[in-house]
Amino acid sequence: MGGMRIPGTTSLRAAAATGAALILLTACGGGAGGDGDKGGGQGRQALRSASPAPDPTRVPGVGDALQGRIPDDSRQVVAVYGKGVNSADATVVLYTKRGENWERTRSWAGHNGKRGWTTDHREGDKRSPVGVYTLSDAGGVLPDPGARLPYTEGAAFAAPHYWPKTHWHDFDYVIAIDYNRVKGTSPLDPTRPEGQSKGGSIWLHMDHGSGTSACVSLSKSGMEYLLKNLDPKLHPVVVMGDKAHLAG
Image 1 (spheres, helix red, strand yellow):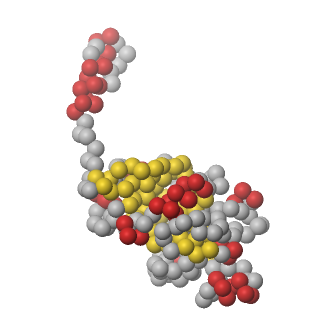
Image 2 (image 1 turned 180 degrees about the horizontal axis):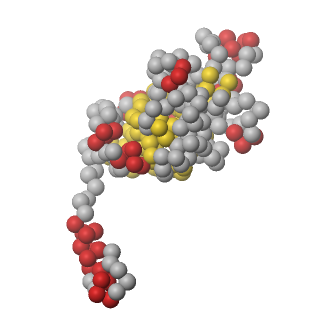
Image 3 (image 1 turned 90 degrees about the vertical axis):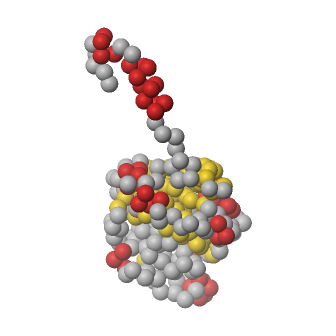
């Protein structure tokens, strides 16, 4: 999760052999008068009718700034709609591109960083980074459920048991968000190309019912669905942030 530090290791196999603990997480109208109210219903109806229809060629709720960062070849978007800049509550929606149009495929309730969102994520700030990031690698404690993304299985993903018991299964399934990490490696790879202070190890993972250290969480069934359906050939990305930043 955000703020995760993993002692250097060249492979899970080597770590398993030594029994070393691989994960250390420092942290997933009118007025009341009669005249003012006259014809109000018709006026509101006229305004609704005049509202432009949503553009199906754009991911809903995403403004020009982030829409323009979605790669042209991407045909799968996991959109994370944070409730507010300081809120940990979110809705996670998978969109699939059919022809030129984005279609809503599935959605789940979820959580983000316990302190909300930021456009300048830092190690340990407990906020999730706003942005568009590729999704390249997956893994978890549990065996591969049929993931299309490269999947690394290992006990090294397990949350430490000094954490509350409700968090112990957070990393049974994870999908690495390509923020300050090396694509094509296990989600456990501690390498941070932009430096340690920018944080890292930000994942999609299983939900424990409240905010995370910086990750995005959703139900086990949601994670299973994403693992089975996110296809590297469709170049999946996550578009994430609070609703205001997303619409900017």
